[in-house]
Image (cartoon, rainbow, N blue to C red; front, side, top):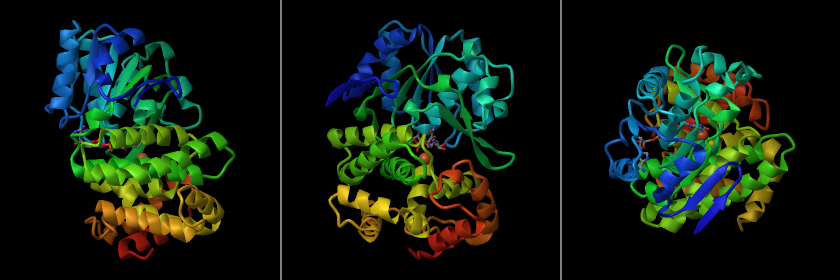
Length: 383
Ligand SMILES: NC(=O)c1ccc[n+]([C@@H]2O[C@H](COP(=O)([O-])OP(=O)(O)OC[C@H]3O[C@@H](n4cnc5c(N)ncnc54)[C@H](O)[C@@H]3O)[C@@H](O)[C@H]2O)c1
Ligand SMILES: [Fe+2]
């Protein structure tokens, strides 16, 4: 499978296409890139080979990897410094959501004078930015989950309040994406599953979000199918590059669809991730069936249609059971307790969930009572 797409940005999709990175940089107008990735990835062959590829093509690339999973402003600030000190003219955002997000936010912040939280995704705060100060970005995903490679935002954790904040600007959309599924084959199994379930959560929550957005609905629907058919394949056989490719597409589709909105899965997973530093996608996977159950009255018909599309019985229950079976097959913890989360921060998580920016996309109003019901069900395993 090999394809070039121009929606939602220029995407070079296919195995082995990392070899086109030098050409992608040229088309993005970057001559001296700063490759931004996370501290774990930087030492792995997938990154080292990419850096070598750049050297062989005559690029004087810098590497910045002082980035932790669930990245924080300090990671952005030192990256901006590295970009300025090294005289770089663009960024290669390389990695999973953490590396991609920080790379994108560094490219954005490098030309701004205001502090990072001034650009949180609230109203038109993005218009405060100087658009000429945004450096061009080439994105190279190494996980298939967040879809951040085709998104216009980066998620940064505010450590002072333990909240995940979305930094948004339209120009944070990468100019070129290299979507090479071979880069994802070395992911540890836990990350393969967690990131894949994040893609599923994006497609599913976008599809269930209220509002008229048939484009997002169509993308979400097909994205759900791709994950449900291919995630078990890549878990069983990590080298299945074709299935890895479908997962990479599903990840990009999720991020494209969730312009429509997300919902309570993400609204609950964000505080849990910020308070316990858990993996984002795996946290979503734990909450998913309980959120479906509590939202049932608002989504029953839509889910029945989705279920029919997947070749299952056209009922809500058939889909719910398929999600439970998928989680089991993939080794996702069934309860929060199995995920080593206790009830001590229950109230705080409820408070944080209802003000999370994704709460507004939930198909029924996410009241504190409903958020706590979802939390309690997830703790006890009551689907
Ligand atoms: N921008 C968005 O729209 C968006 C959407 C959802 C989530 N997020 C954010 O993305 C982050 C999560 O991203 P993620 O799930 O991709 O995880 P991640 O980027 O944090 O990576 C998880 C771990 O996997 C490792 N890894 C990544 N690729 C690998 C590979 N090919 N081989 C071996 N190891 C590899 C990393 O080093 C890291 O230790 C969170 O901060 C989350 O809030 C952003
Ligand atoms: Fe997500």
